[in-house]
Image (cartoon, rainbow, N blue to C red; front, top):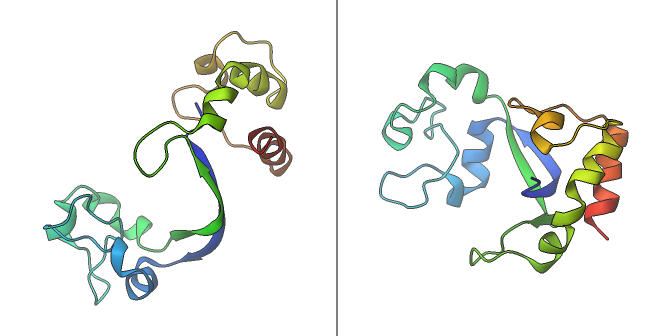
Length: 133
């Protein structure tokens, strides 16, 4: 299932994101918790993250993707309700995956698999044309 898409506006470190996006900082008293996993000095935010990403911190801290606020769409709206556009596309999802990946497999799972697949730039463009109908 496609849960949404967004155009990448910027890719920065978590420390840079900490300075730019106050609402995305991890805060133990906030729900939902943010997803910037550093403190103001760039160290791992153990208190906010509860140790969840501690073993992967060194790899994660270097990349924080910021989405374009004008070029995105998600399966659910801000109130948690399905968007009509994505609901209409659900019946054509499997045929579209077959086309994009040039396969005759009969299930989404058999096409994408457990660990997902990497899309080429051309495949991404194909999916975006379909999603933006």
